[in-house]
Length: 149
Image (cartoon, one colour):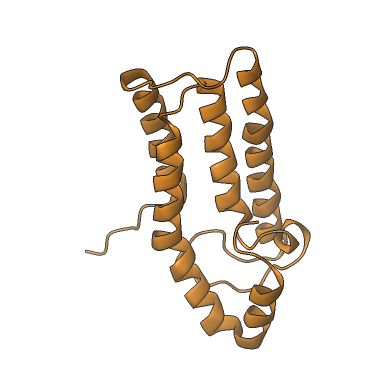
């Protein structure tokens, strides 16, 4: 029986729960005073917006949004001119927003672990698949657009 891979949104949800747990179990130092922590709403909302915009772009191009499925089109315009991975960047912005809202230093380690996991588990594989499928077009896009920002 073939098992389904764990999707990136699951990693995001686990990271969110881990950040809250780490914050309450090991709060370390409160680095952002209240009400300045409310500025965390900015990256949080920006991350959600990046995901919605990227999802719409995939649907408009009639290509899959799911990792490990074969893409039918290479999306390179709109938000994809800024970053090759707007959805993963959006996830990181969501995590940063939550961490700022929590105010403590300890949840930042979860963001670092999350970025490393996403890079290894998804981005590397997806970029290899895109290189195989789109060849020169992918290489040109890769040269002109950064992976994260």
